[in-house]
Image (cartoon, rainbow, N blue to C red; front, side, top):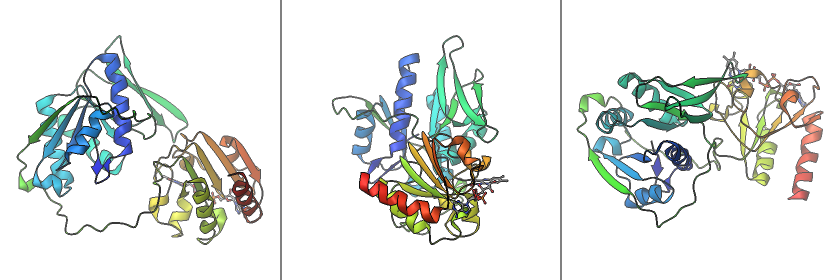
Length: 322
Ligand code: FAD
């Protein structure tokens, strides 16, 4: 499933195409991207340039209105028509909304929150890895023999393939009749949220703050550090529950799953529910005054100390080095 906006395909769509390409090399089936609504020609061309063999443009006025019920209805019809062997969804709001509902409609298995997938040559079925028990263990799931095999993939597991504009592919437009009765939510107005910079899901550096910061004001310092490093600010649930930041900043089991190269935590204890959301980070750096805090079990580097003293010195040093 592809997602697009005026700026073209999303980065996560590029990652899914790269994932599809790898599977395609193993099992020989073509990689198709499904796009909802009146996507311009450039979106299809971009999908092909970065590895798709086919692009299906699902058209309907309801799809242009962004109706998820219409997206689901058309996706179900598409799957019944085309009968894909495997369908990949990004772990985005839309992927999380459509994947499980499609799985119910088609009566097939969905692997949520997958962090790896391979084709098992012996059974010709996909085997996925999924973190379980708050990220403390990894389960291997093999799909039963009923297609499509639906998989929601975490972001940043695959590198999008560099564009090759000489690639050729097939573009098909499909117009499905959508029963107006299924469309229960009507979009009245679109309000564009102020761009907050890099999204947490796409950031390669995240500076996350916890209850230890004592209030919302210190997040300005975290933002300053994130800006220097070209990253984004995140938070623990304690911070969001206290209303210091919106819940869109929350990382963890009931918040966002992030996979940065560098995850800097300040005043976060490292509860398992928080760590479940950042276990994919390559390096964790922790600032915490309690040397026994759980975060230090995961951190590659850590400073035991009061953030009020450590953070300004840390920011100065980073400024000096960059
Ligand atoms: P605390 O645990 O209170 O830690 C604060 C830390 O700051 C301490 O380690 C302390 O030593 C340190 N500190 C204090 N003062 C200073 C200072 N001056 N300088 C340096 N360090 C200092 N949590 C999440 O984050 N995300 C989730 O998605 C999530 N989902 C949950 C789901 C469920 C079902 C449940 C039950 C809980 C969930 N939680 C989640 C909550 C989680 O269990 C923790 O309560 C929460 O992560 C704690 O946040 P914290 O680390 O900011 O606060």
